[in-house]
Length: 231
Image 1 (cartoon, rainbow, N blue to C red):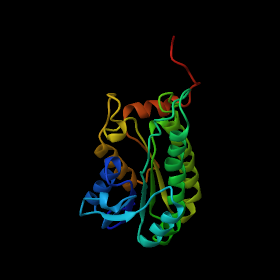
Image 2 (cartoon, rainbow, N blue to C red):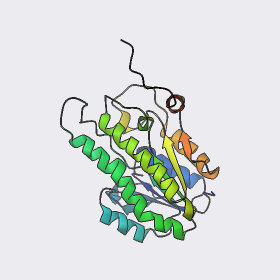
Image 3 (cartoon, rainbow, N blue to C red):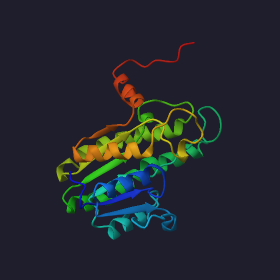
């Protein structure tokens, strides 16, 4: 698809990967980019159009779709880590929040904006997923489970929106240098690189972005039997 002249909405666009998506869309010629955020005052870039949107609030999702009826590219980026839920200790509130935001939030916003995309020629829907979509993570099981669910949803949306001409893109990567991964000193890629690879996928009508070597290796390993770490 052609990004130039398009109108986009990026959820969670006030920082991190979401802000990188918003800037990349503008740099590739988008005519307008809405920043869907819980607090519009948190959007300080004058090139973005703030739009109140808590993805866990279905009413706000519907209102956002009404207000932004010119959208042709939807980027579901808003997400949380759910790190307070350990695998064998602690409560499950963090995991529930991760599922609510990452999975149900993506679903609610996609549901609200699917008719908008259809009216505007089909356009594209981008879901920010993760390497964790494919690998259970004892350190952050709630987040990984929510991303696995979001990956399944992405596949369902790809099939369900094909008839209206909507390109559905799933973006997978390992750790990105943002606040969400500040707790680890593991190797990280930049948010700008994730955004630029996604722009390439959009312009080339590709369904999937594998943003780093580790993610590509994990995807390839899905064809092999499960393993456990060596003793």
